[in-house]
Image (cartoon, rainbow, N blue to C red; front, top):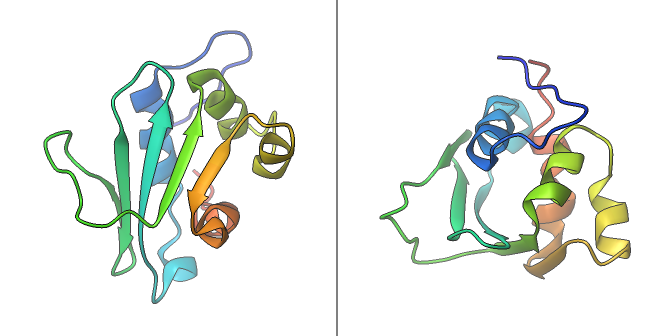
Length: 116
């Protein structure tokens, strides 16, 4: 599935499905990470990386542990998804707040780097 958009912001579920599609299991060996995404105006979204798989958890499932929480806007995540903004620049410019294990956020480009 190809995700590309220059002008309009794609739906959040499409952006996150695209992230999961880009998951590279080879780069996730030994990882057990639960990410929590807090997008302004949306319910929390949880992404689990475990046993060399990545999956979005159902809305009804709240994990017992969250390792890294990312707080941002839908628009900022869209820009990151399409390489219009790096995660590093987003952090430095206050567009993303990372709570918990920052290393997990920093490793996302490696974990989710598969060409689709």
